[in-house]
Image (tube, rainbow, N blue to C red; front, side, top):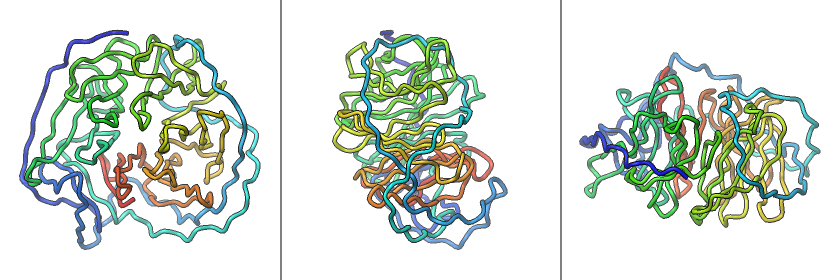
Amino acid sequence: MTTEAPPAQAGLRRGHAALRALDCLYGFVVTPRGFGTVASIVAIRSRPARQPAGPTRPAATAPVGAPRATATAGSTIAQDVPVPQPSPREPRLRQHAAASPAKSTQAAAPLPDPNGDLVSAVDAHQRPIFSPAFASNGSALFFHTGGSRDSRSAIAVASGTATGHDLEVMTIVNDGARNYHVQPSPDGRLVAFDSDRDGERGVYVANRDGSDVRRVSGDGYAAVPTWSPDGQRLAYVRAEPGNPKVWNLWLQRLGEARATRLTNYTYGQTWSASWFPGNRRIAYSHEDQLVVLDLETGKTLTFESPVKGRLVRTPAVSPDGTKVIFQVFRHGGWLLDLADRSMRCILSDPSAEEFAWSPDGRRIAFHSRRDGQWGIYVIAG
């Protein structure tokens, strides 16, 4: 485990409140120029804005009722952390046996396209920014700056002041490395993120203010950490030794060096272990499938992509555990209702990904290039 010196603190920005909305009907704004408070929903209305010149809207997609799904049994395998090589950014889809049909249910009614029901969550001069994550009490929004081609990327947090009329945006990790995918711990004391600060990307934990940074994932490529609801464990992806194009999920208890393997794929890449309430189940994606895994029994429930052959990415479980939002690569954001296993396209923006639910389940943040530059947006949940 490597211990780093506290990174330099940087740029505290403030501004007076001014609601700035793009194509919005309902939402809230988190911007260095204006902010209601992250914890509250601000209802706003404006005339419909012209569609941006960036991503184009795909053809209307009918809701998908009862996607094919199958439940399987498996088991977790405790192993020492391996030493993988760096992995490429994009996985390649590999053909596999189709999942068996789930019990038939009636398709849910289609939702209105919400491309006009969102707000920009940061001013353009702060971009590019990525990977939003809400604090567990809804009082702050974490994100990282800089793109994959930039030589450095900082981790920042936006939070409201006591009056609710000012916004503070503070950089908490800015050490010259490329720091991505920040996740605040459920108790608000810590943040987890991945970084290449030691050369090879790994998972790190730091205090909320960015001090006492330490690597927790051991040697080898690891990324995209997520906290269990009780704050005792981290799930993350790790590249396979000798086969860096393959990613699998691992689980590690905070304070322990040993990690437990959760998946055993021999091709493709898993993504984003999103936790259900109760600390027992996670949702993740692999190639063109979305998988719900029971960590105690090893049983899985698998859903195929609603767009045949398209990659499924960045799933996020709702706070009440009843829904999962995810990206179908280049086909927008989709919502899985676990009660009837129906799927529907709720966001036609093909670049929308890395979704985060607010703690009350009423808002969903994500990053997108919908207006030609990567930024963070919020829609009603």
